[in-house]
Amino acid sequence: MSTYVITGAASGIGAATKQRLEADGHRVIGIDLHEADITVDLSTAAGRAEALSQATSLLDGSLDGFVPFAGLAATTGRSASRMIGVNYFGAIDLLEGLRPLLAAGQNPSVVLVSSNSTTTQPNWPTALADACLDHDEERANEIAASFGEIAAIQAYPATKAALAYYARTQSASYIRDGIRLNAVAPGIIDTPMTQEGRKDPLIGAAMEGFLATVPAGRGGTAQEVAALVAFLLGPESTYFVGSVVFVDGGVDAAFRGRDWPAVWEPAH
Image (tube, rainbow, N blue to C red; front, side):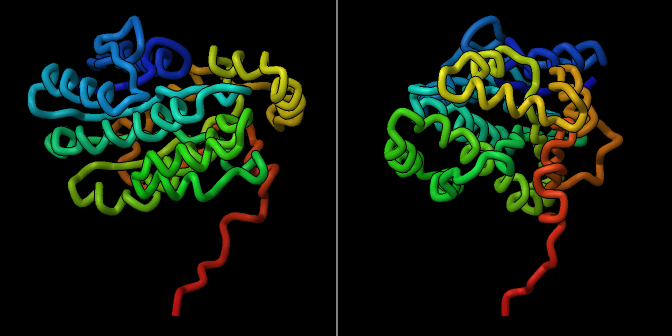
């Protein structure tokens, strides 16, 4: 039996993953705003510190896996600062705080949650992703605020890209501690968060149109993503390090079929 910590465990993909892992005989400590083992607000530094403190107290000096599903949808008028706090810093602050416990775990694995919006939504602010990677929450919030009413819509793919970049750039450091670090990039998945976006007056119609272009002919289910996450956490994925795995019905492949892989051009 392994022990995992999952944020956003009360609904959507987080709940599906919790159910999947528990059905497989594992212990899962859930973190969310409600209906979880640890109830905190991850949008604030204080909430993140409290989550880390409580999680540590529930663990016996080690942890086998961590998946930060907690996130906010990209909707018109939503607080971008709250989204940035939850989507990026709510993931990375907890991960870095739990790292010593993960290093003491058995076959420890971390799965960050990116998004295919990183490669399918045009013109999102790369400077915001850079600010996240620099761990400059104040600067990230300033950049997002410049977009006014659509700040959260612009911030969403930037935070998700930052998570993918973190997985790619930090995986070598983590594996030296025996921790595998990877990410998944879901597309349109049938969850409460997606339904919230589909009802939005600005992006709802775009999401409906986007859904019609999915090569698989449908949106995904939370259980399909949970199955991938369970695999990446488990013993059959031990050579996955620094991978970002798209689970989006073929959308990323359709959008950038030959953009990647790209030729490596060494710096001189």
